[in-house]
Length: 170
Image (cartoon, rainbow, N blue to C red; front, top):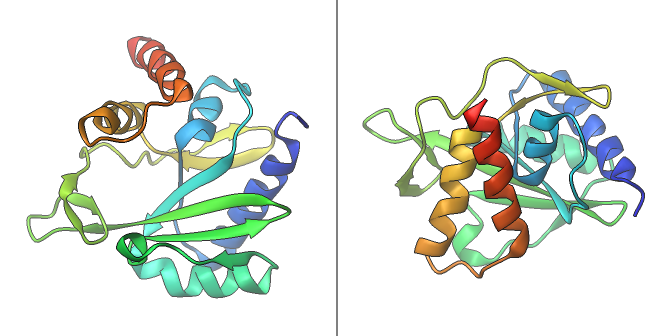
């Protein structure tokens, strides 16, 4: 394990790209927890990011221009997710939208309404990278939903829930 250095370099590249395009992105998943704690808690298999679906085309074009390799996404997820590889690191981009009631949702997934405070506005700086994060309460809700929707049990999710509960309690 390189301590996540390779993934952090790629994440820095992504923040430079999003800044150059003037689009907001939010870090989620395990890396968001690490940024909240300002330390690397475990090895990560990927990087999870969300942005608004309106940013998708220009973001994808620029990622390809910067040598990110697009990966085919399975049919049910194609309209709400893009996956790219760079240096064997998988980067997943989820796409957000608002439903007709003005609630934040994953694009074309109206049954999953996000918390009103899901998108933090102040970036967090860790390892010389400045990025906005998904609110820890939203991250925890997502982890709690996994078991309800039949998502396979993963020990890392249990550890993430413990860390998120500690973060939220502070």
